[in-house]
Length: 476
Image (cartoon, rainbow, N blue to C red; front, top):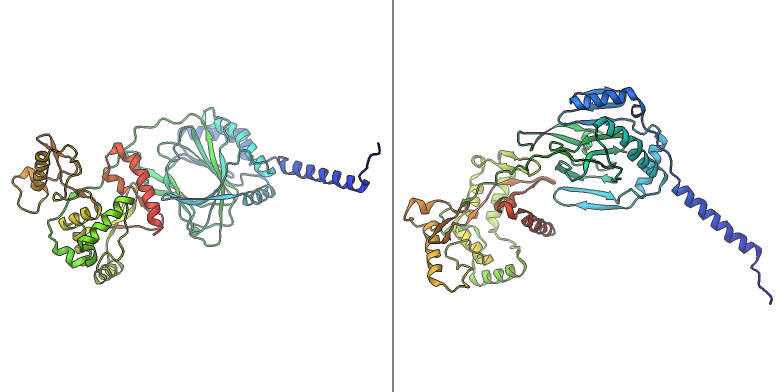
């Protein structure tokens, strides 16, 4: 039977394409060896660094610098010996796909994990870092570092930031960052800021900002005191490109976690409904409208009340906040509360009056009508399933004794019961309270203020609800 032969030029063309594709694949997957700085290969330098690290003293040699204040960290300038390799590495990194990472603690773009990337220079540096450099570092620290590859690329651009944290996670022993940035100054922002800690091992203040520089590697041991941040990038046209990750090994022992004292809670101020008539948009004082608001709140657990204050009051307070010389004080520690609060005695009169509105008994009652929550003793209790009207009446009477603006019957009943409840005949008598501060937030300042009102055992669950609510609020 006759066979049909393909034209010779067609076969040749197909074979040629396969060869080219194979060559291209081999070129992309061929690992380009990365030569590291001479300090890594010098045995005398390694012994000196090992001794200095163990004694927590400083040491420098050429492009290597070790400093143990505020916590041990090491800097290698010209970490990759070949500038051409570093340039090609940067090109490969910029061709990766980046994902925006954003919440109340950070904002930047990050690549996927690089442990399986086959680009020649990425693969070459990865092999050098988690091969011979890992061995060098393990000898310096005197620990067995695992071969676990944990590395990714990050881009910080205008307004990007990473707030104070300590990198704590099981298995992380040493953190590293390799900068591949254009000429950079402190005025560009994006510094790696190192914090001191107090007697409770909580971060206090920035004592050493490290300005990123081309082909510079910074590493530090992950410990209970390794608090650091990436300050906000201020340059509008520069990209803070870096490779970062962790060398894994046995974690350092950590003391019990310190609990920061919550912000003080206070019961309402004895003010009548006159304060509402003075400040609040009349539409929100209409009972039928309050019922609609409550229905919406019960459906979605949130509500936005536009034009809430009377326009003239809003303008007066806004202008006073903008023009007045309010004294602002930093709140901390920065890994828990990163914001400024106004000193009460420095507030303009109209701002103090607005605060009294929000803290007043009448406002508590208004919030109860908006939400259906029992934030005032006049509101009905939620736990009426048992049908015990006498107990409900007793509970209401107890609430009246502690929460009313009328004269209470005893000193005990006047005591605020928001922090520690008081049992009367087996029932909890408590005064609804609020936690209030005049706060000033700047870009990416944050606070666990909302969680301060939640019992410690419930804060983990509450945190997820707070984060969800804050994300929704940012969309308004």
